[in-house]
Amino acid sequence: MEGHGHGRLVRQAAAGGIGAGVEAAFATAAGQVTQLAWDQAAMSVRFEDLAPVSAFPVVPGRRWGPGWWWSATTGRHVVHGSAAMLIQLMILDRDLDVTGLSARPVRLLWRDTSEGRVLSWVPQLFARYADGTGLLADCPSSPTAGGDRAQRARGVLEAACARVGWVYRCLEPPPAVVAANLRWLAGYRHPRNQGPPGLRAALAEAFGEPRPLAEGAAAVGDPLQVLPVAYHALWCGYLTTPLDEPLHERALICADAERAEGVERRLDDVGGDQERG
Image 1 (cartoon, rainbow, N blue to C red):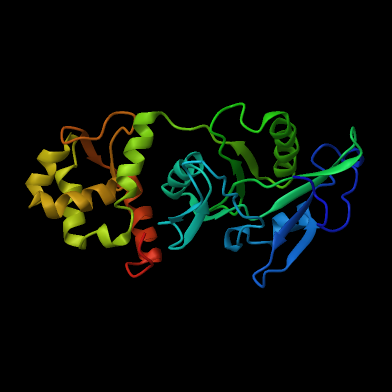
Image 2: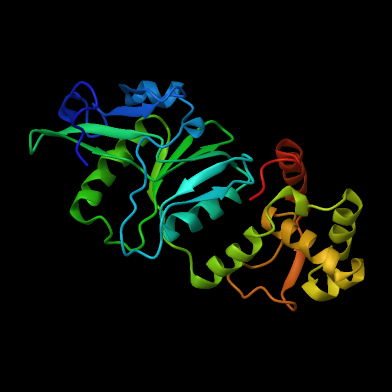
């Protein structure tokens, strides 16, 4: 998508390197599209709070259309436009270092000196990390998705993000087993599944050493009550298991004491009365 109608032309990248001369167009909270130099926008704009600068297309005949993901990180919904993007949202939402998520919040524009015209790209995802840095990311379904245009944009976005201490990445789809496990655990991500403090403490004790999921859950109480809490704990990292192996009743589970403090802090921040996922 070219940058016609999005404000003044950007300066030539050759003036300061491939990452220089890039500008950012985004929609403010009032819905007004504005444009700033990228370096300035990256330091001053909370992209995690912005609505998409452009909508995800609805393609007739395609089995997958735009949808909404309820984020356990923020307690808000994030729009997604593909199955590949949805699984990456799950991965980022489960990362304790991520503090904010949004979809397509910014359009980056730059002048292509070889063609003499302004080009632009809208990354699919933005993530804010606890240290204040950011991630711009795309979620291609295959390495060749987007063709030459995507490859050319990738170099510009990588350089632009590096200038401000951020990262741009094309996120690769996880293995099928990992994706299946994430989708299952994501069904228990809402704080309503966290259970009472006493139950979480009992799970930590039961899985102080690795043991099968069904065995440890039965040791705590009625599996119908315990398993949803165990799955929630596995989602947020209070309990751990290798996600590259099928998650079933004999899967080995262990409490992760090092992450417990961070998990509890996140649960307190999000609370149990947010919108339902």
